[in-house]
Image (cartoon, rainbow, N blue to C red; front, side, top):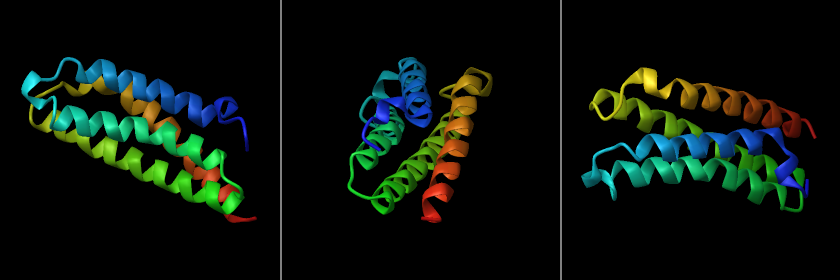
Length: 118
């Protein structure tokens, strides 16, 4: 698993991270070191963990990093829902982010299952 850039899940998670950066650029400036930072770290953690896992020495290690990426996607989902609840963004402005996140989570789940059987 050396070339992580060829993995569709990495590519989609990079799209998600880019979308999250666009979304959070409209958040209140006083959240720069609060929710904005937390959301962005969660978003970039997904492709980062996929890349790190792909560079490891075994499928077991790769599977572990996929699990961490999946956890980060759940964290991101929670933070975006909170952003709706506290009025930083409207839900309809998150349609693309939620769609990408759903795709990424499905791909991660599939890969985790694939490498669990080895």
